[in-house]
Length: 103
Image 1 (cartoon, one colour):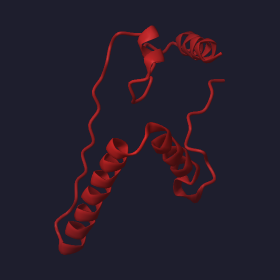
Image 2 (cartoon, one colour; image 1 turned 90 degrees about the vertical axis):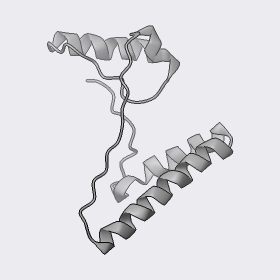
Image 3 (cartoon, rainbow, N blue to C red; image 1 turned 120 degrees about the vertical axis):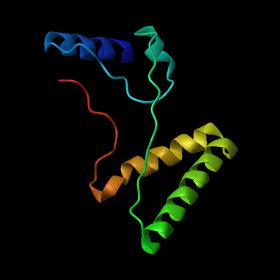
C-alpha cells in the first residue's frame, strides 16, 4: 500500500510539471527503490550577540546533546514512541506533525 501511495504522489507531481520529488530527511529503505541520489542536510543556527542569547545557545546545545544520547542509548522502539508523542504535541496546534497524503 505504501509503495502504491508513493507512486501516486510521484505521478501527481510529474503531472503538475515538477522536476523533483523530495523524500525529505531519513535513510528509510523504501527511498532507495525510487532513486539512488542522496542529499546531505545540515542545520545552521545563528544567535545575535548578548548574554541572553548566549544562554539560549547553551540550552539549545544541551537539548541537541540530550537527543543524541537518547538515540544512542534507548531501544529504537522507545525512540520512535517518543518521536510520535512529540510530533503529536507539536506547538500545541493539535497537528500530528506527520506528512500529509498527496491529493
